[in-house]
Image (cartoon, rainbow, N blue to C red; front, side, top):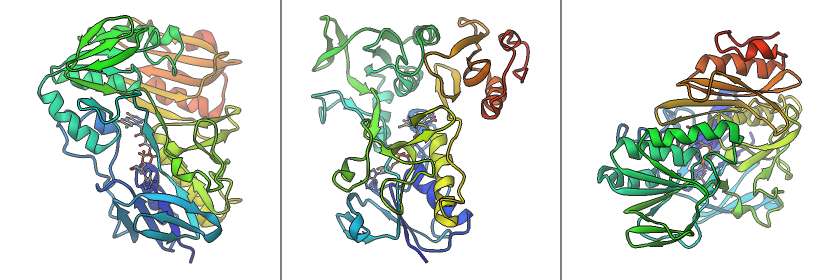
Length: 397
Ligand code: FAD
């Protein structure tokens, strides 16, 4: 039987091992992860784990029972496809089939690497370092008003910290959502007691404060940087695996890479979406759950037998007491339709392409999300007038 080696023991790597067994693969499966911890889930790191409401978020997976060989605390440093081997600090590991699931690493603020009091939030170790910072109710400056920045600010406010969020763009989530949708979200910061400073750049850090480019000084016992993440693919340089300009492994619609018997999945991989007519790089949990099923099907039954990977992407975020969910993928040209008003406690926004829903953002309206997601999956048109009435369930015209 062929030996499958999975590099990266995060959600995508673990789910690949699980899916292989679920789909009846009986050969050896080796799962290699750089972190020393039992594989764990990341979303709780900016929520329950950060606040000390949960000790950790280890996956409830019995690797021994699945006959999956776990090698933790082992970094993979290179891939030699001609020899069908990956290199680790502990020596080479041979494979017949290789799955790249190394995820992403957080972008740092230039010049702040290793500076005491400056934190990132990606790993269990990061969360463990931040927990006492919250407990001390420090003055915290968060750099970046994206998903992670908003969730961290939420937790820090809940812990009683003074929080200032510095964002270079004019509004939160500028990369993800149009102004009309993101602007109302700026008010959430103030409602929670956090200060949001937009259109501002960090110039330098000084002991106890952050200096902005416009001269403003913000008190800061700690700084948390949440300015995005990049695929962790540096170790693949020179391996022959094709990478895109964003650093992602450019997989095909069966999540195969440019090398034979090498797959890529999760935060490290982009894939062509026929549904949306473009290549997608998705940095969300659901993609690290669904993608592995395609990879396992391709390995187990052959790529030709596996269904193409073309999901309706989905994610959620818990921020400022709100449950925010998004399904699909929208483009600038799509028509935006509100269900409810942005000042309301709950509202949704639907994106239509020729009356067909392509994406939906729901704030506190999980039913809209569930119904909208089905319409997006089916590609069925809606009556825009009815779809704009929040009292009417979302359904096909
Ligand atoms: P990762 O989880 O990054 O796992 C990759 C693993 O590979 C890591 O453990 C890494 O150490 C290891 N690795 C990397 N390079 C090597 C190497 N060379 N050798 C060996 N091992 C290596 N998504 C949502 O949809 N909703 C949320 O609410 C949400 N909250 C989040 C909160 C936080 C704090 C973070 C960080 C992410 C959150 N996400 C959320 C995103 C979601 O967690 C990720 O999309 C998901 O973890 C991706 O899984 P992955 O396995 O592809 O990558």
